[in-house]
Amino acid sequence: MRKYFQFEELGTNYRREIMGGLTTFLAMAYILVVNPVTLTLQDVPDLPAALRMDYGAVFVATALSAAIGSVIMGLVARYPLSLAPGLGLNAFFAYSVILGSGIPWQHALGAVFISSIFFLILTLTGLREKLINAIPIELKYAVGAGIGLFITFIGLQSAGIIVNNDATLVGIGDLSNPNTLLAIFGIIVTVILMTRGVKGGVFYGMVITIIVGMIFNLIDVPTKVVDGVPSIAPTFGALFSSFGDSSFYTATMLGIILTFLFVDFFDNAGTLVAVANQAGFVKDNKLPRAGKALLSDSVASVSGSILGTSTVTSFVESSAGVAAGARTGFASLVTAGCFLLSLFFFPVLKVVTPEVTAPALIIVGVLMVSSLGKIDWTKFEIAVPSFLTMITMPLSYSIATGIAVGFIFYPITMIVKGKAKEIHPIMYFFFVIFLLYFIFLQ
Image (cartoon, rainbow, N blue to C red; front, top):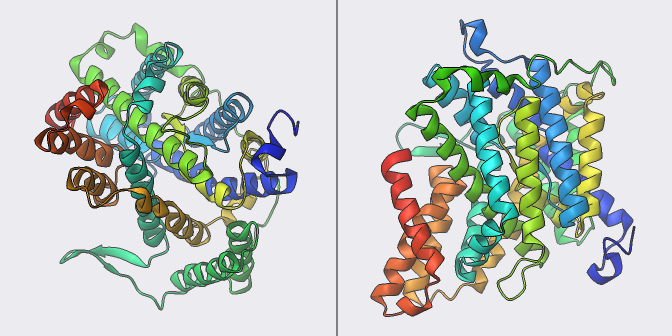
């Protein structure tokens, strides 16, 4: 096992990998609650029963698809990167497709299935890997930094430190709120541990925050540890019924499929590049085993749609595990095991509240923006697309949109500077695709 995962070459051991895998799971565990709540539209009253998915089935589908994707990523690609149904994509699935367009959830799952099959074909042909390797190294650094800012913004929001403000869009929240104070405590503890060089400081910070939250009755102590596993029957294979319905074959559904394709490709590519950069895997602007890494999310998304959930993608929270010391796919296997165990220990997961995960996201954001130092900011033709890529992600609340904006400006600034020959032909392809995306899909 140690030889297969190259523990010695990567300077790691079982303890660090297990700690990293557990940290990633704790940082991702919220998806086991958020995804079922989102896909079943729990916050929408009086929704016709035909449009509402089964909560228990979606919970099981979420855990299983995350485990499947993480196992493939760990064993095949050997990256400390875990997968689960993606945020943003699940909101599009629920609020835009089902609620906004009134499309049956079975059709929505069918759209995810088709987009995932197309991704699988692109991956097997090697085209997805070529597309990622064609991205200039400066933009890869900018993507990593942008995702760092994005997840920090998410962490500050979930902690209640940054809130909505009608006058200025965002503002400081109520810092006297007990839950917000708990998150601030978690940030301080994690910063102290990380500054002192404690291995697994992010993980220990989350555990200490949970314990303090229980002591002050801010986090409920679970009343029971084990519960029964819900049935997945209501959603399993339900997508195949949509293929026999003529209403599935419309221009609207084509647009939905294309949207799933676009967002998943660039969300996953951005996350893969960012986490790989953080772990030090990118060499000469090439990502080793990129094809195998991309294969895992394709297979996971196909499996997830059959099980009954929205698109499965790489989770940027994996960077928390990397920060805790994870360097190999063994950590992903640990995370996958935790997702499988969560099927039986769902009551315990309620202790992983937004206040617990927020400090981890914020600290990981600090680590990820370090890639900014590798960008040559004295070259304006590089600085503009890099900056726009980075800043647009948190402001638009979308990794894909940030990538799109930066990739549109890159060929423009390079051509004006007289460096057209330095632009990879694929970047011109991206330029056209992103323009069409903003014109027709936004």
